[in-house]
Length: 214
Image (cartoon, rainbow, N blue to C red; front, side, top):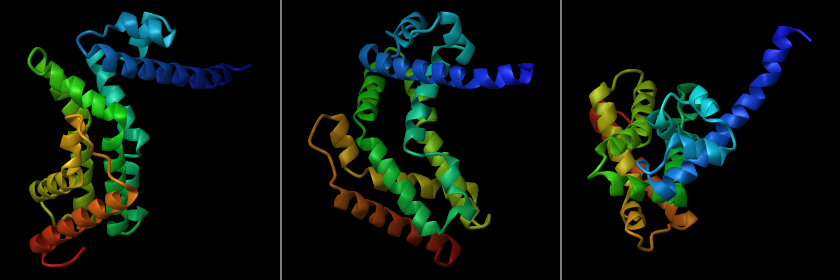
């Protein structure tokens, strides 16, 4: 067996351990919060050595950030489906909008919002990490998408303004209610209606900025 073969064969195992670590860390953060979770606990619960944990993540902040990003990727909230060549602008808006709403309906996502809010007073850095890896990451991708589909006619500032508007219209009232533990779940029909309304508002915004419909 060649050296190249050995290296190639080892990669899937390494990726599997990374997934184990992320899964264990995600559960521990929900139970113990960021401050109450240690890398030792993560190693024990993911059934790997502490050295293995550190081989994948430099520190707890990097691990927490990776957990948030992994959850977003579970709902395909990455740049791959926002590329200009991947379809009509309206179709991509509907796809990304539905994924955002479904993400915000995820019980683990709701729980981590509550965890972060609970730690703000003692550890505001947790909120920064969460915002950068979650909401801000999504806003950046949406803004880049808007600039791509307008072929650079939309400024970075206006693109971000549109992304913030679209994101907040998608969240509507249900997101606040979910964090407060009130009834919040939207039916599939209501989710589609929310996305349609947000998409219509965004297209109107872009029309006022560019003088034409996207």
